[in-house]
Structure formats: C-alpha cells, structure tokens
Image (cartoon, rainbow, N blue to C red):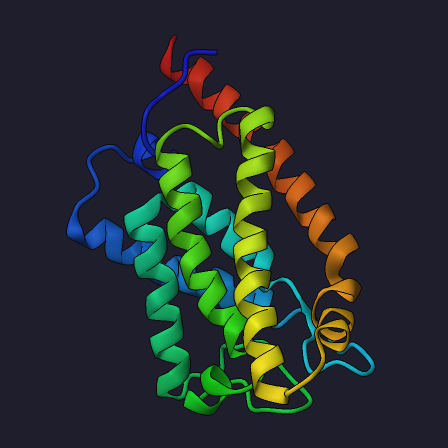
Length: 199
C-alpha cells in the first residue's frame, strides 16, 4: 500500500475551504453528540459507559490534529454554553460549566488532549497500518483516562484504589473493543483509498 501523508480527511478532501472545514466541524460535533447519548450508568460510579470515547478516537484520527482539536473544543464550548450534548449522567446535567468542572470533567479534558495527540499521530501516518494505529489509539485512550482518573480522585477525595475501581475497571473491556474496532477499520479504509488514488 502506498502511504499518504496527512489525515484521512485531508487525503480525501485535499482542497478543503473554510466552508468545508466548518461543515466537517459541525458534522463532527453532531457525531460526538450522537455517540455521547449512548450512555449506560455504572453502579457505584459517577462515570457512565458511553460511545463518546469511540467518537473521539475516530474524529482525532480521521480529522488530523488541527481540525480534530477544533472540533472537540467547539463541542465542549457548545456544551458549556447550554447545548444538551454531553453524555447523560445520573449525577449531573448533560450541559453547562458544572459538568466540565464536576467529578467527570477530567474525562472531557482528556478527550480534548487526546483529539490533538491522535490527530498529530495520524498526520504522521500512524493510523494507516494496524501495527501503528493500535498503539496510537491505546495512547490516546490512556490520555483520556489519566486526566479522568486524576480529576475524579481530586474531586471526590477518593482513595486511588476506589478511583480506579469506579473510573477505570468497568470500562477496560469496552475501551479495548473500541480500540480494536478503530485500529482494524482505519487501515482497511486507507487501503481502499490508496487503491482508488493509485489507479
């Protein structure tokens, strides 16, 4: 496979204008918001299982660093401003500043950082082969949970054992599945695009 520099979005739409990029941002916000609504409460934990991290993995890797970061930052700003687009939670509203500064706000900050990191790695072809996309996605997920756990620990004054039990353990299997799906599907998409571009 002939590897292409840049993100998947930049490869498919190499001549993007300000208008097309704005449309990508709006579409990305809609995609993140939609997957964020897939939310299952976890008994004993303020952190629900959501599709939000899958959305971040996909947006970060396909959009590239700049547009991926802008998209998630705009998503955060829209949610803070009052749009009901954050993941539903039994302990807080799905919008507003309180959600960002609350116990689970660290996960949102981690997603913002992860979108930039994943985009940076994707801009350097990390998403084009499984052997590089898997560790890149794993690193992005680790960033999300590092911020999330640190914030949860500080906000609720929990022991680290309790923090990990509430904020990490219930999500390991689901996150592994999300990473595996993304790390497998992206190289397949790249392979099809490469064949099309090299005809």
